[in-house]
Length: 281
Image (cartoon, rainbow, N blue to C red; front, side, top):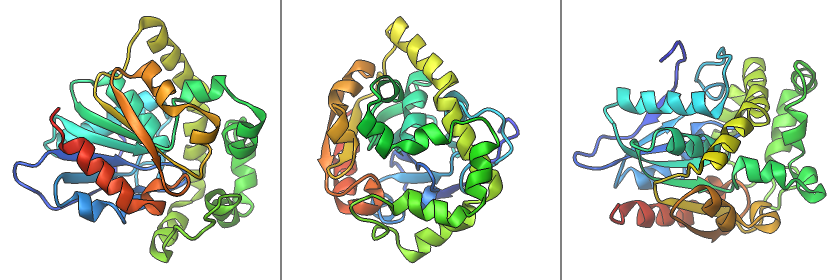
């Protein structure tokens, strides 16, 4: 697709069921859904994809705008025969989901975003507590190759500290199998792509988001926002208020655990997604 290979795990086909696209966040891959996808696959045609630059998807793309990353996923779903679908994104995947729902409203039936507030809101409301908690937002966007070189000095230590350091649950949410996948995919090429993802979020993505705000463009699909009660989003932001600034129909609530909702609160997440997606559109 446009020279970019997108890797995805596709669940067993369910005749007559709606499709559900799951998008992961940083610094992970589609493996983040391993506790949730089997249950969701009982009711939906589940596709869990790796974003460009992550997992086993292409690492060579120059454009890491959320617009380009969203288009990847639209083309993936079309190739799989899904013209319209439900959408759920965690972390970076939530930001791609936000852009996908804006740019391709005809594709998205409903969208769920996990443990994020809109990118523009988070940058414009940056505070000292936020900068301390989300320091990587400001480190990864530095000019290449500074962060790439520093991370590359001990990539697995950096990965483990990113996943667990300073978080209430530490490394406990990550099974050995999932952690091994995150480690396998944390290559030098992936590290550069991930930095480019964050650089785009602090650059072109903000331009696109401000253009949407100025034009009054909002997510038309019903939106569910969920966040970890022990995480930063609900403590430093008003997530429902912020999502209502950019989406027409919003609801949501906190769930147990911290940032890694699919791995820290899989049962609560699966139940909330089943309820939300099975309601009439």
